[in-house]
Length: 488
Image (cartoon, rainbow, N blue to C red; front, top):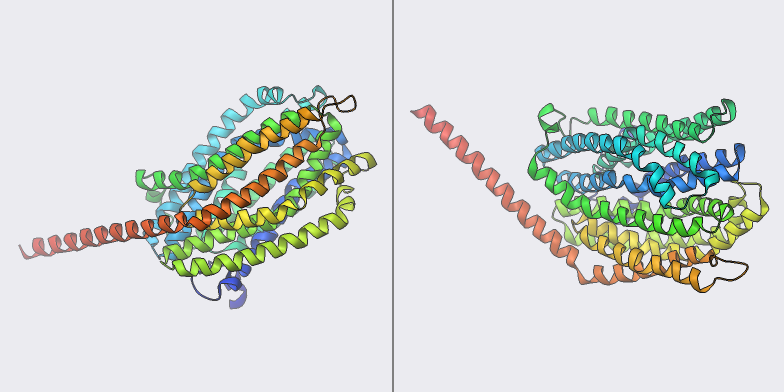
């Protein structure tokens, strides 16, 4: 029983062999990310099978608009995860408690904003994206239901990020698996049983997310050995709120950059017609599974670096970098080989249309080798974020995504226009993505080698030391004044 209990608890990554600690922490993250992707993919599979290829395209077209408004939660989650991991590593109970409480409040405010603004901008954004008339109503229906119920999505992502910052990647995994199973069951019931269409898929997702968020809240409420949950900690404090946004805003902007690029490129994708839109949905769903190990190692390295920076163990961060890179790159090579050998059967899960499977596989072959480059990017960016340098990964994303990917996509499309392809060849979308991934890995490696992240970590440690000294002096002064008053 004690062994089982130790699995579902916070994990200290500042001790033990780095590669073992990273692997132990990454495996639940990987399984959780796979479950998250399956969670999202279930909608596509069931919609494609029971409603049709156009409905599948509608769900895919909703993605960029959805992601654009989710950047608020990405920013809060990133800032929270970094602060939680650093304060946990430094054993700062009061600061850890206040950080968690403020994040809970900020998430509620951000959710209210999305619930109000999302439905209002949905239709205009879909029109701006040149969404075909044949699918725009389905896309709008899906998005409005998702936005109105987005509070579950918000709290699961923020609270599971807090759990990971505490080193507990297993609990978040279990709750996600529960929600995933529920999502699939509700999808089949709402779509195949009740004929609720695309809206049924959105409703199933929303309900499942509420359940996973509730489970996270329940878990955190029982972790009183590490921090306190009190009303006074829910009140936003300027110092902590600013630091959450200072650390999280660059990551939120990075996600916004990706989302804007996706919106711009989605407009190009939509110009190729429903078949290419549907193929893009299939590719992105399979791509999501292929990218999960990279994201998992990136998240693991953020927590690993954060805890060790908090514990003032910079040399251990460097040692963990080598281990993280070895694990991530090896995994990416295996994933690439699997995709190249078994890609077609994977595509066939989504549709019975042979032409659609063939198009999807042709595009996937372009992307496959890019997963190794993304492994490098995610690990090194994760370490930089964990050390408190969230700005550098943001600028790299801006350069590779906006300055390179978008012009490359439209440029190739322009120069490949022909009678057969009046809007250019659809391969342009995926070639541009491969270019962005490769360039991103190169630039990230160069900036990581320069070591600005180490300077940031050292400055944060010094700042924290001064702050702790000031707090200690204040406490000593208060105690002395109390003693003097007693004497008087």
